[in-house]
Length: 576
Image (cartoon, rainbow, N blue to C red; front, side, top):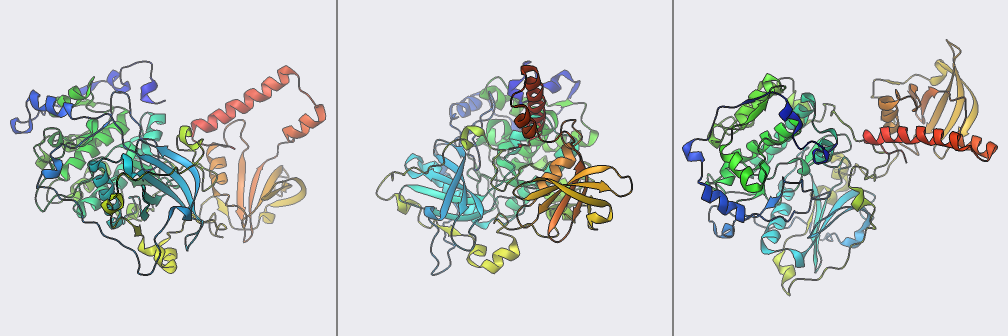
């Protein structure tokens, strides 16, 4: 249940014994109340467009705030130079090269679509297409859009969203990004309220590597929060939305008042100048939120929240492990110079902390550690983890009106094509076309420990056909040793990848009204799912034979169906 929906306004962890940390802000870390008042007046309640979903605003909490009006005049900051990365003689991408499939999100500046590329070497590949209307972008927003585009051109990391194309028309800007099927971490956190420490450890470790990579490029991220962390099809994180990121000049600081209030570091709130250490404070806020289901500093209004960030003692829930409490304490240092990750060793300070003692960082970077949660979706274009308010809409890219005669000139050099897409062989070696429809490879399931590579006929005697579908045949089979009858579903691998079906059956087959999977076999052409035999047959056959049910019979059937489907929905599975 989302926190906003709790009947009791008190946060769950506040009922638990908490210990107040004795550290308070030093004199130099504080600002006078008048300064807080000034910053409070600069806040705007307008949310920004999320890369692949709705820009969520939690009641009384997160909002995006503007940079100071003198931001562009501050000589301590610079905008990254625009440049094109387009192979000579190669056509730029255009909107008509993408088929609109679904709406994933919508904001005041534009929309995010799920699209399929219909031409070129990556034809058939699914992407998220972020479309921004130039006419609705203010000067600062235009700069942020160009900043995001430029940063994504340079960034290549397993845990950061990848930009594949960028182009513009007379009235719009287009960013073509990875489609991340698992939605954002905020949605999952809203459903589960809080995560286990092992889950938090995994997500934070991947996030730490992403943040460190951004810092190595000289970029301050400045907007770490669950809404900006997406999950891919396997459950790995992908950091997105670089519109508030900044590139300070060498050895200097940024002074913008920007970000999401509850995640802001004290040095951003008091405008004394901030650098990379500000991201590690936000990292701590995210850790606290995932572990407890609540934010560490949250007042009745934004002004009070900022005051707490600068002055309040941290209430440490005592149900957290000593390792968790220790890491939170060293991340929540109001003096950024004392904050973990800000020292000369950088990311290594965080890697060496006891909280991450069980993490193999090399395996983590290679994505060889199994994520704690894998999105259960049945098709590559499934948008189950995105807000149905948007996915139910008809995907239409309405015409954009240019803001002025020189609108196109404002975004000169915006167009971009990922270099690997210009070379199909490189695209294949880098795995860029992972979403392109193709038959499941032979080794898809045999890598999993529960899948047997020997012949199904070694243990089962396959008998008569008892059902048939588009991609499979169901037969009666008898276990040779026990003579117990089962049903075996024989799936054609060239027509369907059944790994997700296997995962769902293994994970939820213990439910009374979900069929139990006994064995899985695989050969060159087929996958064999051996399941319990349901002797009652199909409901459709019973309906045809009886014509009608009594109201009592029908209500019993519907109650079972509804409760089972509800159980699947609670675990993020849509049956369809």
